[in-house]
Picture (tube, rainbow, N blue to C red):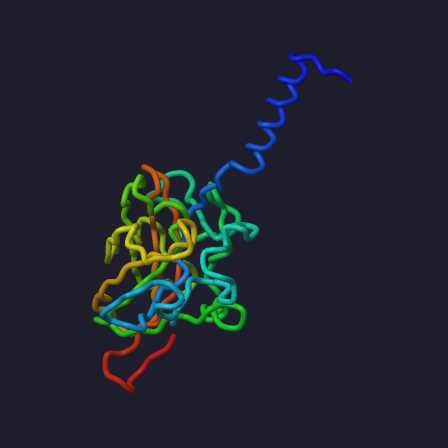
Length: 240
């Protein structure tokens, strides 16, 4: 059967569109989150945030520890949580109900320890004055054409019944870390990034730490973790 030139052109154009959409479309960019709140390097002289370069001794709330690094954008819902409304008064930690992107469940446990252990990663335990290192996946946002935006680390003593408000957390910013501080990793999506800072003086107890990152102006993503701060004197520990 003969096919006219016009028909052949239409068929060819349709085939090219189908091929492009199925084979040439780049992977969609995802948005980041904190996985580890207490990263330990194997080497102090060659700090490396990849799984080969260290290990985690404290995770974000309800973080599934057995999944591969940087893969929770495929979860339902995805791990990343984007705050909705006024970024200064928005919900600080995802509850799976609120937010522009609702994110995985990061509500406080009752007791707090129930959000850690078992299928979740362990809670971080540190002392005031120690260096704390946090980690996050690049998720295609640490390339040369991307701005090196800032990650806020906010720390406040948690309440007995509920988390602090975002406004309270913003009054307690203890570190600002460059987002693109990354180690070599698996491509641009799962490239491991992170930053370190010294813990300020705090009385022994349980505290809420928030990782907060602005991708675009007014577009904030957060992750939350509970950390146990112990007495500086070894052997004299207090747990809440």
